[in-house]
Image 1 (cartoon, rainbow, N blue to C red):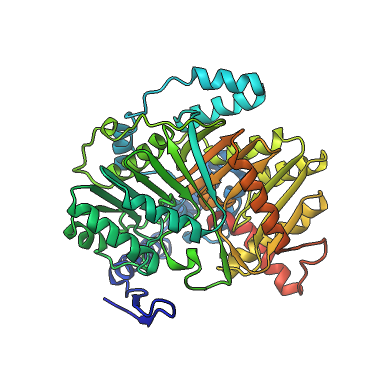
Image 2 (image 1 turned 45 degrees about the vertical axis):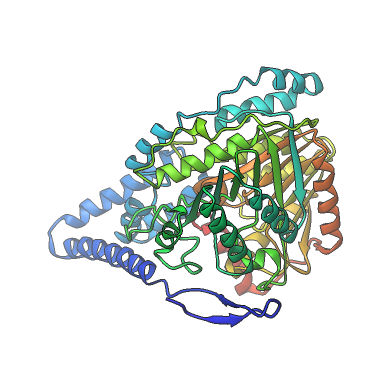
Length: 519
């Protein structure tokens, strides 16, 4: 159901902005009611059944011990201990319902069946070549392959887009050339110039026999698409599924979303980066000033890894899907110097370690001259804070660019809460003055870089399904560095003491920092 229609000031076309999310509202109400009902029952038992209070106290301390004894990050344990120990009944009931950040058993079983379809490749040649350049970098590549179950690729051309508008134009031209299949997976898809342009191409391709599949995150598109949009796409001949459809269960279904951004065309060309399919990402409309985002285009054998990630996500959300991934793998190559590893990241137990965080820590710990980072959010645990501090204090030039115009004010407070500590260690902090930085780039020493969907926050590093491209000694690194320095010129450098505020504001920042792992 349409909620609002506006006239496009440039194209003079009507654009559907958003929808009344009836299905989502009902699902969220179910979650709230279920949670309140469980807490009410426990409270009733405590009041009216003798000695039940002692069972509650024992449970409360048992849960506290379980949290302390868990292998979770201490920063994540702290707010949960606060809830459990200071809010009787409510605290540990919320723990039982929402603490787990792992996939449920059905999802794990389905994932294990699917993820066995790996890309068949021997990495020996590429790893030996990297080792000749740098043994430490070679060890990074080996570790990343093991953590993400991916491969290292040479002979892959890469093009970096410093702004969403350029990615959009390039993607449209590549989509028009599709002959076999098109795969698209995005956290957000919203009707407008960007999506409507692409949708017209997809419909034309379907009519010509091209296979088209689309995955979008169900919660990510809660306010941008109707609840049955996948059915609308299916009627057009597009195979579509929502990722982790919201069902109104009081568990961790609000976590473990697909934050991935992937387009694959014929297995030969692939796109990823921070750009979702919505008009603010190409500055066709403005919500938070100028939207600074980036993307990367791959052409060559490395695209197979993006193909695999997409097919995994499609299959786990479609029980009827039984696809042989190898049918979609392509041996196309492009003679280019340099190496890359397209990789996926996500929650336990599918990914046993935090893949993206490991890449960032390696980059920080092994850098010699500089580390440049752009991220929309800086909500990080003590381990990453210390790694940034230690890197700066040993003389490495560490710079971070974040937004100056926030999209979420509370998250902005959490981001700024780290500034003074990091600046005290010598980290340089900049805010993009013109608007919102949504780019996720990590660059070190003119040699290694990572571009993808990974923010420096708990959602990206722990909860969500993410993807990125690790790059070594490729000419595209020059473009990433140039873009960072150009963006820095348009940013405000913060100095110690600039993040101030009255007593109440400092209190809010402190509380936001404590509870940031839960956001």
